Image 1 (cartoon, rainbow, N blue to C red):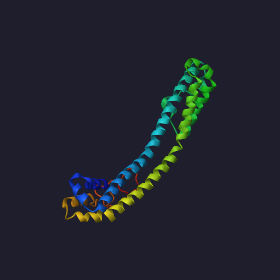
Image 2: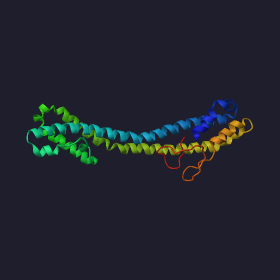
Image 3: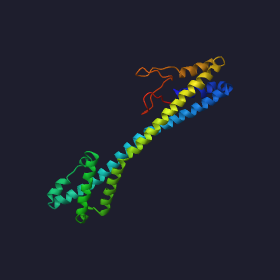
Image 4: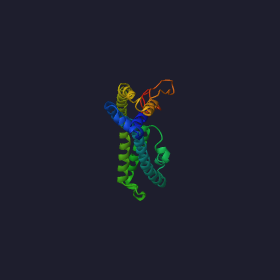
Length: 231
């Protein structure tokens, strides 16, 4: 694992050895530390691009459902008290009923409630229903509709993060193969314990699926492209 290699190199047990070694190794080690942080940040961006939209849609649906249910309940009570049987049937909805179904079904249902309340608004004064309540429902319908298009932007962010991760992992592989793995040989006779610790962190592991990965304790980062390595 790149993080394990970084910690081995920067650990207090071998600090003097590393500082006394080739400057090129220290420079490569600094680049490794920078890459580990960069990969971690990019992976977090990739993950948050998925969870943020999901959470936003859930919250928008909850707010819409609460508002529409409150108005539908008040309208139903008025209908029942005034022998408006047909409309009473239409507004006899549970909280679950309000948000049941596909997006278009939910939106149309809430728009119907908005329309019906608007038509009978003057009669709903005693039920504490005002134009401000209708406006709130209208705004929440709009917010729920708008957030349905956000996944396009979010997916674009996620795809960009994935491309960045691919480039960062390539850079990481090259850094190990052409710099660190070569330069660490200098320490084999000077500090065998450090050399062996480094080699252990770079040992070959066999993850599920049988594909060898030249990095100890490698796990796939959440939602990264198959075959890439976690920092």
